Length: 281
Picture 1 (cartoon, rainbow, N blue to C red):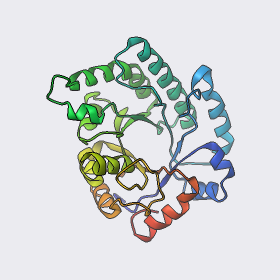
Picture 2 (cartoon, rainbow, N blue to C red):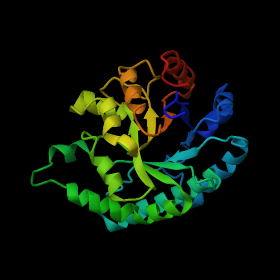
Picture 3 (cartoon, rainbow, N blue to C red):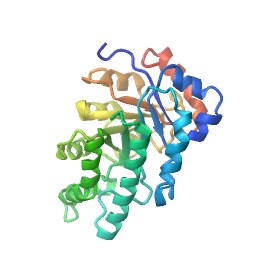
Picture 4 (cartoon, rainbow, N blue to C red):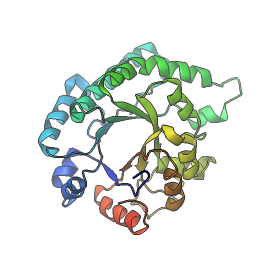
């Protein structure tokens, strides 16, 4: 049924899936969407090391019917980098991440790859000045992501651009749309949006949902205090969850909802909180 009570997914490492008591049952009982995060650390995508993650995941995910995506690399790897030599490194890492995502997706065309927005607070406050870099950010991002987007299209995978410092929730929505490709859509991190709201004057989290609209394919659910990127258990921060889910319910299709927490064991209490509130299971 359209916009029925959604099922939560989980961001996790393979270590957590193996070792955290009750996590495997939580995932498999509902075939929850997964986001494998083993490929984020520096070095995880060097020299085909991603193949170890894919091979390790196969027996651990045997029988799982939910969608499986990854968080792509981001530490020091900016998708709008102006240096062509650095861009080549970013593209190499993105290509390796795509290979891993293809392997984890098992040919179903359902995987996602989270990448970070190129928009910063510095950029926002310098719009309209001598240092306005808006057009160049768009051009550089296309130059960097173009080959990866074309390969993602061939395999039915989707890059989702996640807000980090973004103050204007519409900018990365327009960036994603500019690719005119089903392989590029929008991600929302609730804690990042709440930080931007509390610390830089961005709109509240539910407005980020509204701004993304039908382009929103993926959400990182985490709680925070509006000051920093906390990844707290849901219900322990100050995000207005009923407002967020009210906006999500208005979308033509529910995005995959990935709970992403600093402490993976907090997934159980977070799911219980959202279930008790009548928002998600």
